[in-house]
Image (cartoon, rainbow, N blue to C red; front, side):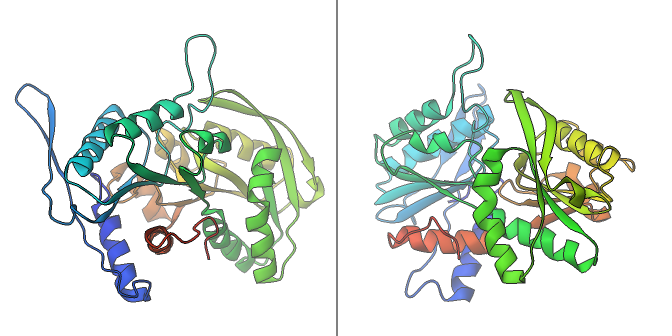
Length: 338
């Protein structure tokens, strides 16, 4: 069941089932809710029982968690409960409100637990599970009941794309992790890629300090610093929002450590505000962006210039999503993608 903007993704997943042989007798239907507003401005949704009653239903959505998106999600969850879905799950590429993962000062609470409570309340606590990709904060999985949130990772997919293109240049390559936490979370994907490609890739590590969910600063670098000179540096992280941290880091890598080029490699291309324009500037120190489409790219016209220039490379996650949904449906493990 695709939320607005996810209709193409639903069709790709259905095609993936039909093409890949995952199905083994598992049919895939698409039920698309119709959203609108009354003359008073109040929202409504239309959704009948077809493909709902007695079905294993999966909502396809993603963040960022705008007020409109969150209200639509709660409405659909209530409809699935009322239409007698046999089981309901939410698959969200980018976890809504995921950047608000901790209290910020005296006036802001962490919000993921609230989001989980709202989803559970909308289904009278019948929501089966939430599946999310590369959470901004691992502690989010502790929201709700045990095993309620399952995290999967697309780091290996997007990193393999960037590493393959970088190696094809025939020049030095180096990885840059923003902090120890990201290095620990990504090291298994890096190890797999090195084994698959039979290469060893040097790495440096940042001492990044986050002032808030919207602002952070790279204070220092350590590791194999000599490997940065004249290298293609892959600057790894889970997401790019406004782009400020990545652009500042790339400038430091080039000006202080003589990196030849810097590619930002992330799972979630939030790219909000004027980020697309900043990355499109000819003198932007980030030479290329590698992202997945956990946040749909096609409807976002502000990304057209980056796509057409080749500065933005998108790895589709529909093949992985087909695999995830098959394993979810049959209660198989989905923590480790193939």
